[in-house]
Image (cartoon, rainbow, N blue to C red; front, top):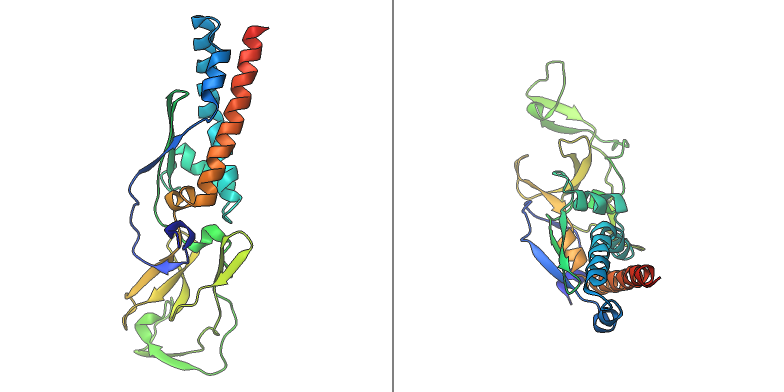
Length: 240
């Protein structure tokens, strides 16, 4: 199975993915070039405008391909193009000519909250039986003894929809929702007996989404279709 198609949430330490690049090719570029070779000046103007269209419209073409396969918001993809520091990744458009267009992208593995995670926070329902836990594990403004009696949160399942229409339960032991320090809850997995022995559950990244066979093919198709229309539009403008 292609790695890009095997993106079940897994526990891991956060790390930056290496930068990758996609070459953009227009299959009928040769025929289109012939249409704009009437004069050198007109040709340069048409190419300049078309390259500008690529830089301004690639975001929509790429986003459309990604959200067509993955259950991620277009707003998250938009952050990648804007280079937001806390965004899910970074996508840059590089183009100096119609036969030299590139998408350069990188990004970390994302947490399930980007993919419709349910529930969004730990449920309020508690178990009937009490349990003794160390007092230092209790956060309270009032003094707490060495041992505290609490009613644990009732068992619950965490599900995520990475691929559109394919919601799955995270089937891992000792998984729970915890505050990530940013006001939101993300799933963690216990890896040891201590409270600090936990790692975040992460899913897939922007580079993995772009290199998914279906997404990559749709990106190429969207850009080729969109740029061909823009190029023909500019050619007709010059010819008229």
